Image (cartoon, rainbow, N blue to C red; front, side, top):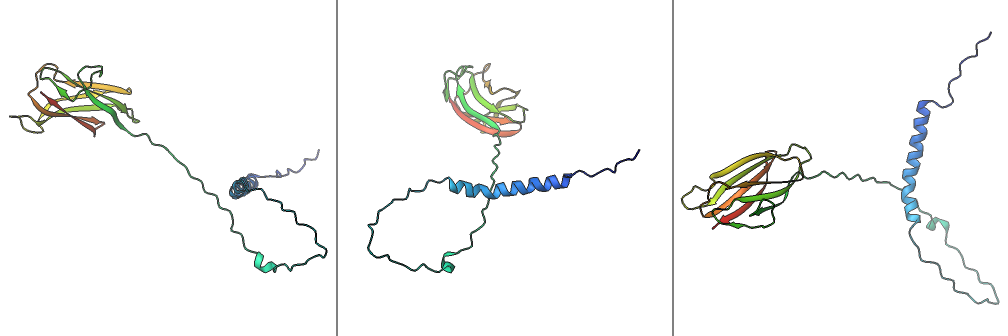
Length: 191
């Protein structure tokens, strides 16, 4: 029995890649032309010219003046990628832990709550709250009153200071860090 010689396939892999590349190039070059074809043009108006007794002839301009070299169409692709911003947002101080009563001024026996929304694409959620003195008589500025480290892996969070001690009257601030980077600072006053 005779064995038939093996024939190579009609299209090999390189040929298919070349065809796909050629088709993609033709499509990319045609897109600007097709877009320009879609633009609405004003409809031509027809003005009837009454017939004349004798035909009139006009000479046509030379074709050399009418020919020009068209520019090849170009295609541009723009890719937009959105990177979510990491940080704490909608930060505010409140008298109550639910954040229903917002305030920037508090009595000396009141805990101060700070509430915020968190956006952390890294999913670390490491929050550090540092409560500092801004201007309190008899206390060094920038002294730390309270600090707390939290891990919050949800979209909202809160922390508080001053729940067990009374504040001295003056101005304070709370600094909120997310994953070791300062995200926001809120100032408040104790009366």
